[in-house]
Image: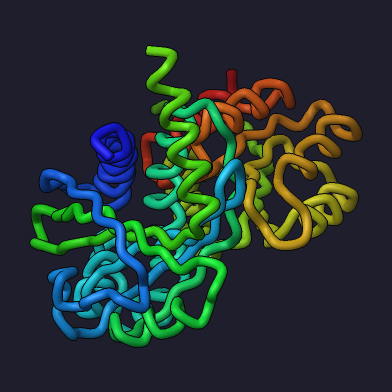
Length: 195
Length: 125
């Protein structure tokens, strides 16, 4: 798990760098923690996101192992991110109209940055679906995830990406199956064997 | 950056309206004389080019219907004079190598003044 944490740390670092460029602000990272849960047994309070509504970007990745990646921001912060990315001269109406597309773009950039770092370190290649964006409670997101029996595990990269000028927190999580987890660990073992 | 006073045409191809807006905005600031047209997909870009080839083209990769790499391949085969910059959030090394193989410039997203400047430098180089 230590190697997995380090690889995700590299991924989160690249993701933070991309986010920093997008919103023109320093992005700070907390020390990452990897936690693995069975989704149906997950205690939502343990994730530390409370019960507020979240802006969620979802994107599926296929490669040597498959996963669904989730980038989560508190709902009220999503519009702030959109404003930072598009500039403060736009009206609130225009920003709201572009919120969904912009958050898809932000999520696409951040999730791709994270997964690409992992791919490059492990020497593999992923393909990604188009991202989708929705605003839901964490309970609803997880309930929808439980409905997918193919991915019963949630690998939570408990890392806060804090956009300094807004004090906005982002949160990354990955849903995957047992075979995918096994394949991921196999690739990590292979990587460790080479160094 | 010095503005090239010659009128050029740039085709921006991206399924994201936001990305197209941002590329357009930064290019407009750097090259106010350029004509900018847009396409939402690879097939739309190819249709646009068939009506009148632009000088330059930006291309996203992950789009519905046709991947940007396939569109770039077709453009390079049929219109080798068009310079293509691939703008993508997929920054895996494999994708960057693919761009080189296709004779295109790889530019990582997010779209910023700096990354658009990289594309313009390639176009004018």
